[in-house]
Image (cartoon, rainbow, N blue to C red; front, side, top):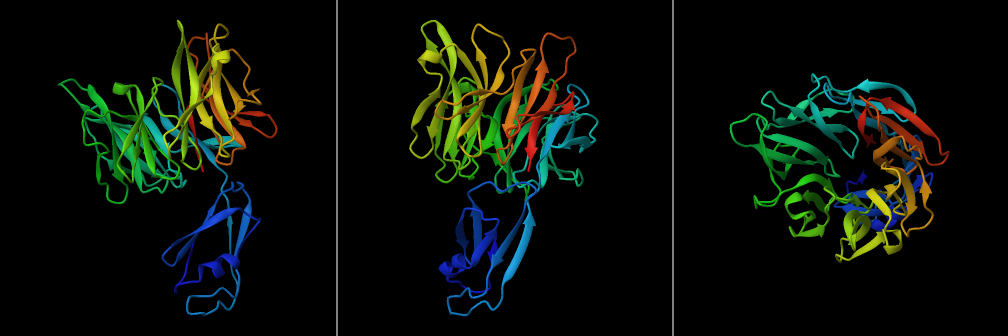
Length: 402
């Protein structure tokens, strides 16, 4: 963004602005502040040079007398995860190049779950209290400056999810019920404003339940899963209207990069056989179409669909019904063609997979089946080379930290 002291001729600014290496994008104005919004992926580790050249004009025809130049480098993303699995759970991060992981928290093993900010500067996590509830805390990228954002005490507050602008966190609140410690009522989705710590439920109707909140990348909608209705509930934050997508899979789907669509799964029945299919919903008009799991593919059971940043591919767990009980991850073009099996070792069950922000890598969790006291590992797959790298052992729930 560039903030000007005067009202500018917007076309003049556009003509005199350049980015090297070239980046496709659009320009938006907020008063006297111009924002350049990239529509193609920036390259991690790459240095970019932004130039506003002399000659740009204001509304009163004053001209900029010299060039202004800024440079910035795109940070390489890290992987955040929980380790060890089971008791004594803490947050760790590690570079995608490997090396030694860095422990971010020291809570006595009381971490329940976490959410990474899309800005990349903070992590929110759910921390178990002495009364078996859970509060929401936030820490900086270096693991410092931990602070409580939501005090829940006996209630269990978990599943923190950051809004794209980093100003809000959506989370799930389960109030304590009865006299027993650690006994909770149904889940509801709440939000908290980071700056003020003001918090409250998303829906005033206490009969609307919700879990696993997920913001659209454009910040226009908030999805959650309503177990009581076996549906994904999607709230339009501008109109306050919500829609339900029938799904018995227990979680929302995967947003497109522009926030205009979502991929999700649901069980279909064909005679006496039930199988999982993948659907795409258009948020603008509500149209739903089935994209994977057509009738001739009924013998395929699909897992969670992870939409690629370029919106052309889906990474998805796939199991042949009647074959191995373990899902493997496949990369499939959105039109159903060009399918490629990524993982092939049937000794492992694969899950928790997601694309890197630039779409060049996939991180995932694998769990060895048929073993006593087995623990999961975290690996990364490089799309350009096809290589796998083991990042962490006895570790779970990997997430990208841009």
